[in-house]
Image 1 (cartoon, rainbow, N blue to C red):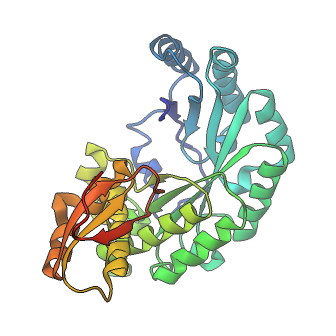
Image 2: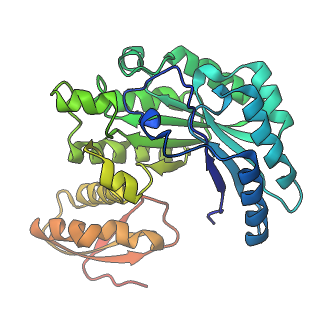
Length: 337
């Protein structure tokens, strides 16, 4: 069951860093942070609209929530706190920087009902973090993640795929494994998208940055999805949120409105090809979890067409006993139950 969270974007207008991919400075004149009154009004309306708030959260995103002025941060949290508790929202989720976490900050967040903290790690290679102007190190990520877990918060980690200096498949796998070692409760994976008015855009236009090929990025992110799934860590976001603004403004990089779907299609195609390897061409039945039938078929039935060109005619059936990404191959004489 998906819960309806209420999210607020809090841009860090005074951020001293200039990450290569970030365009907050460019959009800060157009996208203002909500006022405390607007937060209260939105939450009041949401409380009336969402009948069952069990599992639903109030979220403050923007990537540097604990680095904004302390008085501003506390004012937002103070506005949200009355909407928690019995019959209210389950907790508050924030996103912030690894170098903006301390025991004192965590104690303060606990007092206001914050339950989940997401860290924008992006990479676990110091040379990549330095090149892209992140302003923190891999050691900062490890330290902050440890403190968050010790203080009893849910830990979310965010990584990027295809940043300058990080465009090989093994780079992404290295970061993913390093983040897994920190025992996250959830992950977000963001392939690098080139937006105007960023250093990434400058490097791209000058020929100093060649993005990871789109098909390679799909294959790499499919592998990451499987890795986290096998380690029981849910990936709650893969790819930038589909929005008309991003679709219209991006000038390169790895963007597709249904990027996660493409990656999951790839997982199923790869598994089907492995199961059929060495099998004689002909008709076969593949079982998958019922809600994954379209993933096995692929967008516009692309997976089925690829396999048919290889000599395999497939019928896809649902089997509720199968796990996500699991398939079961049966002979052509089998039929869906």
